[in-house]
Amino acid sequence: MTFYRDHLANASPEARAKHFLIIGPWDHAGTRTPTDEMGGVKFGGAAIVDLNDLHRQWYDWTMKNGPKPEFLKNHVAYYLLAPGNTGANGEWKYADGLETLTANPRTFYLDSKNGDANGVFRSGLLSENNPSGSTDKFTYDPLDTKRGENVEGIDPKEKTFAIDQTYALSIGTDGLVYHTDPLPNETPLIGCPRLTLWVSIDTPDVDLSVDLYEIQPDGTSIALWNDIRRLRYRESLREGKLVKPGEIVRCDLNPGLFVARRLMKGSRLRLIVSSPNSILWQKNYCSGGVVAEETAKDARTCHVRVYHDAEHPSGIQLPLR
Image 1 (cartoon, rainbow, N blue to C red):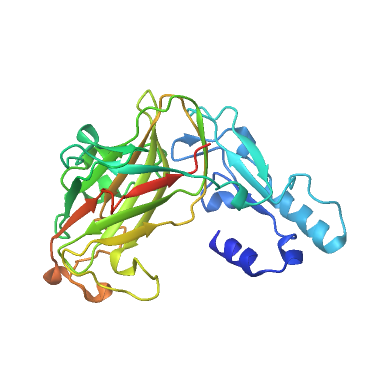
Image 2: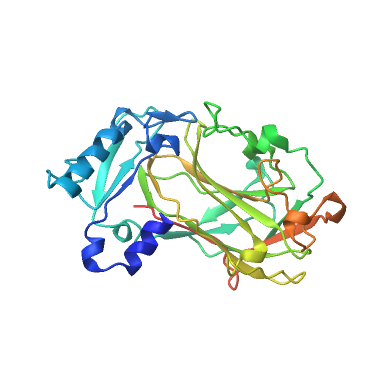
């Protein structure tokens, strides 16, 4: 998606007109051999496209003056998942371009009562109202491995990893949880969410992870979106800038991940903010040194504060229709 956006931004009108984008619900392997389910999330039969044949049609069209593939009805094709998790009524939709799908997002601000958002059952709020001004906090201890591989790192090969709630239910003082109110109507979520966090830490660096879920009325959890950011790279992915203890800094999490799902009436959105602490990710020991060279001897416990006030309105922009 990044290469696609960058190329369109710098290409001539003639070149842009020749670009077509297909966004399916699959994993990496599914872009070659699509399936109708992944990680317990059901897509429906329409998600199974013969991509080998579509590739052949593409080459026949572009290189042999053959007919344009019927599937390419517009420049962007994306699969819109149906509400619930039966897979029924999932369908392909079309648009002139990505920019037409991501306009006018709604901002939901992080908030909490008395700075308490440390768990699913004592969560903070995601609201379109201005935040109250309180501050939430969590602790990241690089040497505390109780979360472990079996909690945070559900193997993608597991058939239910995308609906598993083990990680969410494990959150305590090591993370923050926020929920929206139940949606009053079925609501399409189509586009690229982005999150802005205003934070302070008492170490030179830390990693932040964010995860967004749909929590359906029956309690089913559907993974929607996520990102991880090393805070020293909050301003540039090329040049690190360590954080001064106590300094409030802005961190934008905008991985460009595209979501297309019809959220059920009565569903809530759940946002988790934490720090990755798993063997599946490079561990940041928070010393401010070269992370690849750090060891447990360098470890420093990091206390993270997330701000949501008038000057520091932490919030997530959601392309809800």
